[in-house]
Length: 431
Image 1 (cartoon, rainbow, N blue to C red):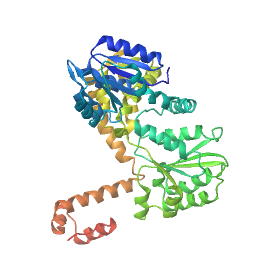
Image 2 (spheres, rainbow, N blue to C red):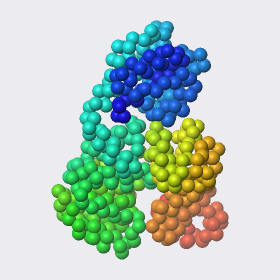
Image 3 (cartoon, rainbow, N blue to C red):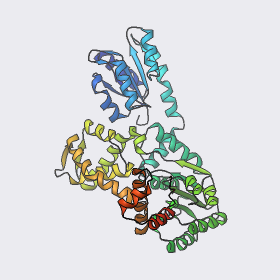
Image 4 (cartoon, rainbow, N blue to C red):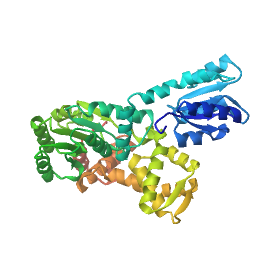
């Protein structure tokens, strides 16, 4: 039953909960019950059920209000409303607020089974393939059940077998490297090497030599990481190899944190290389767009680092909710590093982490992360200095509404110096 759909039944009547649970489990569903609707959001965040059966009238909880909250926090959560009053307007309102169906009391078990049967059918379809995919994903630390995540994996599974370059877009920390490992291990080249070229770590002298060395291998998967950092000469060298490599034996995967289309429009990326790589582009969603997956990732990372540091640290449901609602600028990488820090630095081996503990850690790690995200974009000290100088100059120009006389006085520059800097950074004087 481990791969069967998980249902959460929320109702204040113990008899109904017991009966529904027994019937559904006989039909090979996994079932959890909850008699208190006020705890529903925390439980849903922890369980990530395939379907919620929600009683609309409970003493301490308004079912319609709870439905709206569920759909607000978990937009893709499937909910079927249960009501004992046969009220059609309420049914209509529930559908308008995101419920997928409506069931009346007294419950007709055949009706319930027929309305949730689609869950079992979708689980049975290609069950072997789905199970293998899940194992391969989790082996590579790729965790998720959200709609965006499943859509992403479906896209990757469709284009990965093609004898064409694959281009992955995504912010830092979204899992592009992990996905490259997954693609390699599920391909016909899994017994060959996965070779990675870290473009952001190369200077111009190293680029061409490294690209030539990479393509000296006749088989395998070549992961060209942060291709946007290659110089124009490096890009042209890469393109020449792409035109001549053996497509049957080599899979090219490239990744970029920014739009190559915009770069090539600004003449900062070789247009022929862009069109060569951009045949099957895939965009990796940031973690903040798939918050539904955060509890699953937290559970995975906590178990991983408990094993590593020989501890038994737990996070309560309020702590998990705190992490789910946090804005993760560094995406999965930041969450992973954060959980490791929490587990590693917690002094006692057995400890339940509360939200107050997390807030203290978050305050310490966020400034450091912002610095890392900024610094990671620069390859040289000169590039960092030029970028800072350009934005510093733009700030004062905008502040003074492009009145160059005021800017000259404030920055202690001569007219010639200001003119040269405007030309250097291609800043248009709007006066």
